[in-house]
Image 1 (cartoon, rainbow, N blue to C red):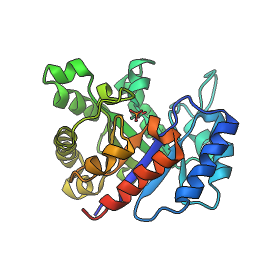
Image 2: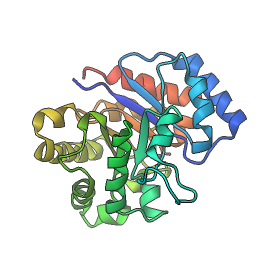
Image 3: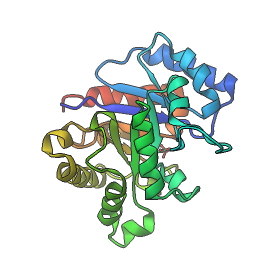
Length: 254
Ligand code: PEP
């Protein structure tokens, strides 16, 4: 039985005052969620103060990226150890915006995942196809490639979650249908089984991401291979994020 996992990706949003307000709202709604794991992934500058805001709750802190080198002359970068020291439990690696806006390659992402796990961080590794790739029937080829490049047998699967995020659904208001999401999640789990064996594959969480909202979360999370979500826009509103967390709670034990 997999515990559903909901993570909020704040992207480059919120100043300190807005972030504190959002956390206050979240604490009021779901300070100690049961039957679901919850994380908020903030911009780097907000990690330390948001960690303090989360003290006394069961909501964990995450970052949205890290660099693969432990230290050195890498102006503007943040190491995995620095994230750990700032209070992070999680880090998102391979978000489509990192791949497609910042040009991160599979080779870089592999190094980031290894560095993050070595620092003791749990990695949320994102995969997903572009609209034209889906239209050309290439969805499975693309996600398979993104998995092969990074998900090698040496990784620590106890520090790994996969997020399937079709790029055409991120921030667009277009969501994959539950059938579309389930089909890719089942494919991803079958591939995980090939790498790690079926016991591990059945224990790994695969989040869905792409315009998850309070109105569509329950249906998506009820799919057998969808284990919660990675949530962008809707996590910036405490009531909406809380409603999505509750939808995941209700999907537990499906
Ligand atoms: C994301 O940022 O990973 C995401 C899925 O965003 P949104 O929910 O806004 O589509």
